Length: 215
Length: 218
Image (cartoon, rainbow over all chains, first blue to last red; front, top):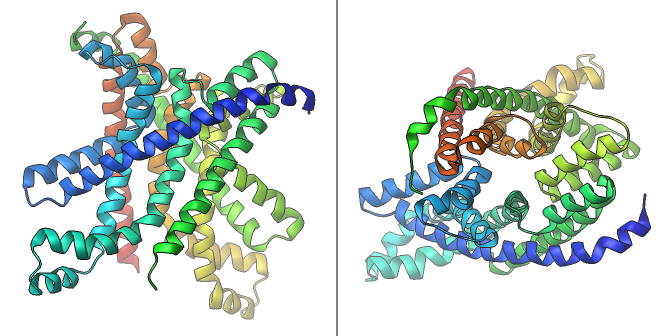
């Protein structure tokens, strides 16, 4: 194993790791937004909105995220959407993650017993109040762990933007594999950084889950 | 530049051929991940620590890093130690191992839930530990996890698009070839997406049928 080489290139990997983290954070925020909107659409009382939500989930979960990125980044200019690689990466991955999060959020909301809502209505709360004050606070606690799984997948999915030349961890590893012919060493550098990011995020989610859980 | 879908028919056969390769690589990698998953699960639960720990490390690394990075390691890394695999084989190994780790998680849980009682009963009837595992515990466990494994296989189909990056001429790379000739990325990536979607729907249909059959046989 070429330790010297690894010591020489690791600052570049560290820099790339920050890009991966930034990508993950922005994608997660966008994903949560789309997830919340998607879940609201899927639980709406309007058939057209429910259909729209279901179509969104089905299409974005039913096709590869890589293809979705390619359509947005390479195909976008044909329909008047000009994005740089980083923007396309965040938007593409965010919309994709949103489809998975829609199902997570919806699942948590429908698992709250109907009796809770009915009781709240009986006590004089409006439909909206019952949702925000009774159903949602309980559902939010149930969401933490499964959203954590979504987050874990999303962090690993940020590697896909290497294919549209965003200089994040995987792209950096790929580039140094090409120039040094030391794939194992480069994998080790990138891999350890990914595992640190994923481990820390996982601990954070577990901590949050413990804090909000009611037993 | 606008959209022009009339370019598609001329390259449809290229993309359809890519479709067949995507199906081939998905099936091959699914088999690797299925049997690999059983192996990993049995090792994780029953092997002595000397064997178990390296496997644990392997699983930890495969669950904690992106598939794309793993594909680069397998494709370029094996060349470094003198094994020059065709891209297709490297892709099958990469996808197969990646999903074997996820399948193993499911199978382990199922084995634990079957093991109690069943293992003791089989041992009482005179089967050795290995026989009891192979003939009694594992078959029952595998049946219990077919539906969730089906979800993993659908995820595998979508992740098979990644092997285009190491040069396997599957659906994504075929679309890229057509784009190289026509400069029509939107049209051909959309076409590829449509094919993935159809294969995906077909797999979901098969999965539902299998689930129904399992439900009946219980």
